[in-house]
Each structure stands twice: as structure tokens, then as C-alpha cells.
Image 1 (tube, rainbow, N blue to C red):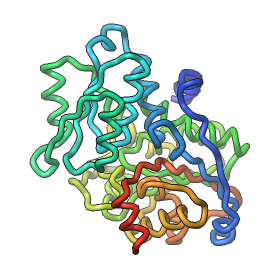
Image 2 (tube, rainbow, N blue to C red):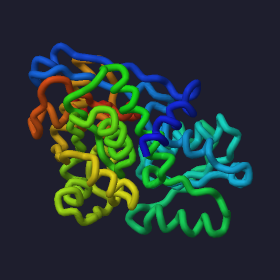
Image 3 (cartoon, rainbow, N blue to C red):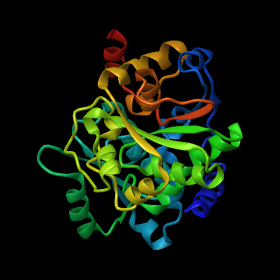
Amino acid sequence: MFKKIQQAQARLKGYANKTPVMTSTTLNRIVGAEIFLKCENFQRVGAFKFRGAFNAISQLSDEEKNRGVLTYSSGNHAQAIALAGKLLGVATTVIMPDNAPRTKRLATEGYGARVIEYDPSETTRETLAVDLQQTSKLALIPPYDHEDVIAGQGTAALELLEATQGLDFLLVPCGGGGLLSGSAVAVKTLCPGCKVLGIEPEAADDATRSFRSGTLHTVHNPDTIADGTRTPSLGKLTFPLILQHVDAMHTVTEASIIEAVKFLFYRTKLVVEPSGALGIAALLQGVTDVSGRAGIILSGGNIDGATMTHILAN
């Protein structure tokens, strides 16, 4: 898989942003370690998802590209597939829950994708995707459980390691596990002594339960402000990679997620969505101790005005 991550990095050159790595003296003082923030909120479409989407679509056959691409997503992967498809001249269709953030839907449509809404209380996006794929013959690129998507996401951690010349810890948000598994493979290959920690909300703790038990757990439409982590479970590909390469999983409260978004906004002047702030939440809540040099992937910055107003008012 590491070779695929390196190949993805070369494939993304000139298309994906090489996002900045930032530091905060205040955060370093609070945590008692040297923290490096990989700012994927400055990635194209505002999230790391562009990496995996572009890497996957770019490797489709001409026949598959001509038929078009299908995916399902609450927002960031949807936007990423839509933009990657636009850049590569591939038509895209996205199945999106009707409670997805409005800004993410508008951006997805703005990049040219066709959006199909569904009610998550009545059916699942996977079921709809299978039905639609059978009739349309579109190439399905899921949000995380896809080898080329995982490889693309791993390039974020690869860049972070190149910029910092090594880390003692890496904290990564976890939904379906694409970013976490790809990052863990990259880190453990180049910096085996670095401890990789996955972070998810308490309200959506399926990955943590799966990791600790060794058995795949699921959750249905979890009630968390971190909408990017409302995935039902880890994938058939991401779960074994996480078991093999991740050192620990931790969960954070909704209150800690809100505080993390506020901290990043007020103290570092960064706009980060709740899902992207999970690593900061873990540090501020104290659910894990880090020392030396620690990297945190801020996975995205796509937050709508209403949600940010709610967070800043608390």
C-alpha cells in the first residue's frame, strides 16, 4: 500500500494543494509538546477528500470515465468527487442525505455533480448506490473503502512527515477510516516509532469499539456535530489496515469538539469543521498524552454559518 501512496502523491502533483503545516505556541504550552497542524482545510474543496477522489477517478479506464462515476457522501467526499470529475471530464452522481450541510450540497452541485437526496431514517446510502449502479453501470467510488481512495488520503500524512522530518505521535480523525488507514500506513513505513492515534466522537464510537474488540461494530446515523464521522462502520479494507498499523483509538465528547473548533478559530485563526478538529479535541480534553513532536491532521474546513454561529455562541 505504501508504494500506492507514493504513486498517488506523484499523480496529485499539480492538482492537489500541498497544504501548510502550522504551529501554535499557545497549544504547545497547553499540551506540553511541539504540535504540528496539517491544514487540510486549505485543500481543494476544503478537505483532504480531494486527494483520494482525484487519485481514484484518474485511474479509471476510458470506458469507465465515459460512463461516469457514482458515490455517496454527506459532503466532503461528494465535493471532492464532483471537482475531480470536473477536472478530468467525468460526469458524477452523488447520493447525499437530506440532512447534509447545505453549504456542502451547494458546493457539490456547483462543481457539476448530480445530487440524489435520501432520508437516512428510511434507507441507507449503500442500498441506494447498489440499486442505482445496477441500472446505470456507473463506476462506484465509495468515500473510504477503496484502495485508490485510501492511497490518496495517505498522501496528507506523507507530506506532513516530509515537512516535519519525523514525529513521535500522529492524531487523525476517524469516520470510515480512509484517512486514518492511509496515514497510518505512510507513517509506520517511514517513521515506525511514531504512534498513530485515531480520534472519533463518543457518539460515533464504532471504530473505537471495533479496534478494541477486533470485531467490526456498526452505528446507525449517530447524533454528533462532527457530520463527517457519521459513517456506519469501518470498511472491509480500512478495518484490517487500522488494526495492523494504528496504535490506539480514543473518543471525545461533543463539548470537547465544540471547544476545539472555538480554540482553532480564536487562537490560531483557522476555520475547521467539527470532524476536522477531533485531534485538537483529544488534546484539550486530555484523553491522550503526547510528548515530543506530535502531528495533527485538521481534515477539513467545510462548516456552514449556522453551525459555526452555534459553536461560537456556546
